Image 1 (cartoon, rainbow, N blue to C red):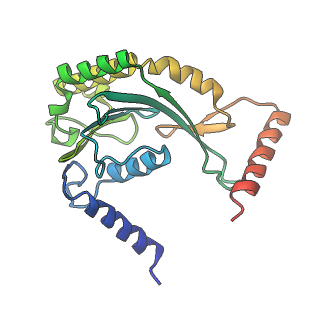
Image 2 (spheres, rainbow, N blue to C red):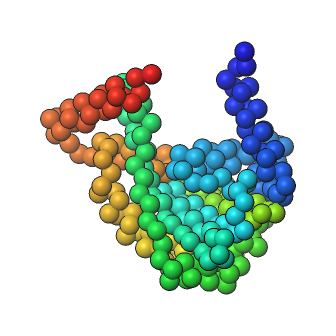
Length: 241
């Protein structure tokens, strides 16, 4: 009988083998192993029901990640582009409880006018020609902060690039270029305002969606018991196996 860890490894290798017609860039770390960031984003994309771009058959596909939101832009069969903004939060429960594994996800379809602006920004910013941060001289990395990720896919190529906290990279011109691009593209999708409304609607007592911090609502003892009871009922109904 195949052990679970071995089975997962075999499935991962098999999935990669399906996309070997593509040239893959940025998914292998300097030690020759698949990078942690890449494997982490794979799990996040699957959780959000986003297509996996290293094996996708889209003519063109762009995905830009922040810690709480992700923008997807892809070319349809007719040559036109479609797009969406996904915002999410994962439920957090204390170690005294079993996890629920729940995620609150809101998807906003982007208008044609917004998509045109985003594609124009991608083209004029020259962001796609920039290497990943580990190939930029002087780019420092840390343990907290925000890592922005840019994925680009076509039928022939796939690239995965990370940029750790460009705001703290002093006067590094590449960091300024990345930060200006990130600020502009999320502003054009109205992402900051959407995130504010999203945060008000999160149905969990505590949650996290980026970084190491956890946000919790200020509740009365009665209100907290209500959340505990709701989580218990959810586990009983959906996680009983």
